[in-house]
Image 1 (cartoon, rainbow, N blue to C red):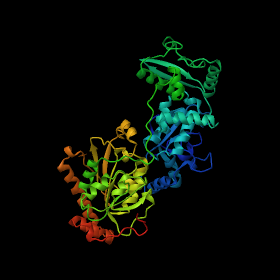
Image 2 (image 1 turned 180 degrees about the vertical axis):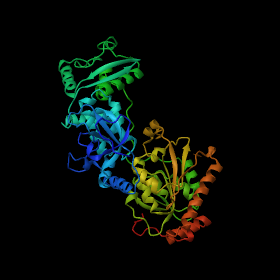
Image 3 (image 1 turned 60 degrees about the vertical axis):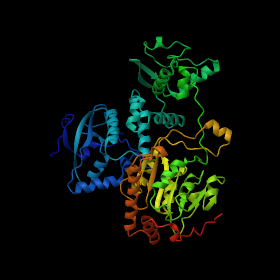
Image 4 (image 1 turned 90 degrees about the vertical axis):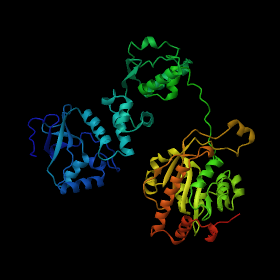
Length: 535
């Protein structure tokens, strides 16, 4: 493609080859944060690995997507033959490193504000993902620039890639710390089919309004702050001293609108709409030791699903009420156990107690592995428990966890490297017991059920294939033998695959062979870990 002379600006939408020297990168349009203490250098905002990858492609004659450049109408410092780079800073740097004199560009027309806004949108759609620092830098660009004062907070939050509440919290914090200029914002609020234009007061103006009302002892009303400019259509609907809408659902909707328009927190918005927020039920505090005991029927189902349960000692890393211990013993298994709660009743039933009041994560794995590790660990540290238990077992880990255990960003790498063999959503919802409570308090609470969905997750060490999902009914009257046999067959397939793996240790392979053959654990003569003091 031939280079296009810039005697006249290219039309909007044209794809042309432009000399790199005519593309300006110093007009404040880079929406990424600097990656070191240097400032003002656009190169310091780049991911060097991404630039090197693009450079290699160019040297192999693999063309990259066009740069997005803008013919800007409101920048007098630009020469007639110059354009502003809006998106493609990594690709521009790659063209320089590859020795290219020109780059293919797609041309747009607009203002510098258009360049920044569209450049931020391109980061959301493709290219190098925004880091947390990039998001904060971009938020400060939008919130501190009067050119974006009329853009709704929700639209800015979408452009930055965060929730509106997060953006509002950042704005308040930065203004208070002097890191952001407190500019007045003008926004539109749509309620009941009408559009209301509001000039949002600055934080300083809102603070003065609150201080004046507090000093005068005036009650909160629905009238906006004095500095607000409200359209006439809103005035008749806001009688001083009365709620705008009397139903709670309507009031909640107006509170959200005020939070978006004025940038105030929820408590201040409620104080404006009514005399305060509706009374909420006190939040139930979760037990600090996470003592939520599993129903015996569910523990029995889990133990029924595990092939070769009695092949080697079973590890219950959180004894709790002892339902898993009892279920495993009824299936001829020897059970080792510990618990962070020294008074856990299940410890009294274990064949070997590895520690009372002992954190399982602090116990070193034994020289010879245990077989299965079924249970219901504390959810707050479930990931660490799974990783540690996999170092103990030859056969696998079968734990009851919240179904949203799938969802955390921090566990993505774990799911990639250690997928479960099978994940089983449980129905109906599981009513975990609080038998450790005093009788009167337990009767008042009835159950510790938090109405969340739970599932059974089963890992086999070394398994890397995609997990299978098999729904299970856990109550005795509802159990389906066909679903349970499907789970057992999936686990047998995983155990056979591990037995064939040459990386499987010899003592683990012995447990695997016995489990697949159904031999009892006593024939293996496995010793408990020497480092542990058994009580």
